[in-house]
Length: 486
Image 1 (cartoon, rainbow, N blue to C red):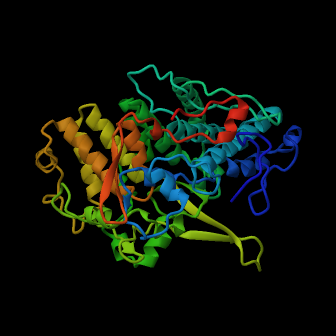
Image 2 (image 1 turned 135 degrees about the vertical axis):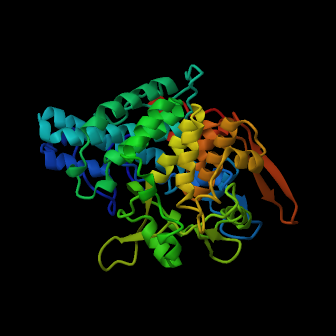
Image 3 (image 1 turned 60 degrees about the vertical axis):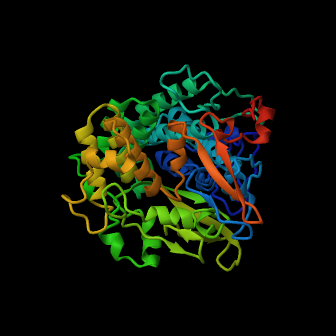
């Protein structure tokens, strides 16, 4: 879905036919959003409509080259596999995601301005909280994907991304990127101010908004990047009061194990799933990207279903669209027709961007990183109780001894971290989140590239490779913003 913007970095909400239309007036008429109900409606547009999965997943070590002539080779998956810039603005590209984040930020800023200008009072406070957290989330995703990873031991003075806090009033405003440190400080300010204001009862379908569970999950992820482990534990624990994570994790080895393949695809992105904390509707073809040359293939599928550190195998399911094109059965496309009788329209993919499963593994990492090994193991075993086929708490318990043997790592902390990263790599296959761990731990990535004659070469993305920063759209230079070095 393409959009028309009146500013260089897409801070307005004017869109073409077929897209959502919340504000189609000139910027100086935005005060027409003058009631709590209109603010609530506006905030449905405060979530990035773009999808990052195609480029983060394909750039990671969760993708492989299936060989010449095997599968489609569109730029959407080819460019990120080779870590090449893609300046297309089509769906599922870095440019589209950049634009969609700033469009979401524009909606949040317009809502915050409307609340203040119209003195909407206490009734608007939950929506002020939602706007602040949504603004923080969109900026966090931008700084994560387009800037260097935050380093708690460093100065973090490398270029960040423009942190926009007011509605744009001119056609071509000038911006600066600030620094990673300044962006993180602004994210934290918005997050901590907004989170206490959120009320789940304000929403008709809470999981399409920053409800309390989703806001705490985002806070846990944010502070994991900052390595403030006490805060990770605090916010992760708030997602499941009473530490009842076992009841809200995705039940792969029970209910999901009984599903047909079609039923699994349908249920994975349902708001009724307890594990789902925040769903975002993305204008994306990702659900139909089932047979790319570069992606989840035979090698990845084989690794998924080999025995793990528990001594057993995962209860996940996969299917194939003709070997070696495998899928983890997570994505169900929603096709929106341009009119009731039309044969054309726009594909959408609903994405659970925050889940209880990630939260628990993030807390386990925080425990392990702060030397609380017993609690880290407890979280890992809670997780495995919903993931291992025919799970037996005694036989399949994760222990430090098993970790040392399986991974060949004697140090308990390093072994626990290796286990958690391994679990997350498989859990979030085809969801794009592996890239976040690659960034946080400065992991190198190797991709095999096959030649027509059957030979191959290995290309490497090094720990500090500048190509780990996705490129900003070319047009941002007109707003005074420098692109990432290459």
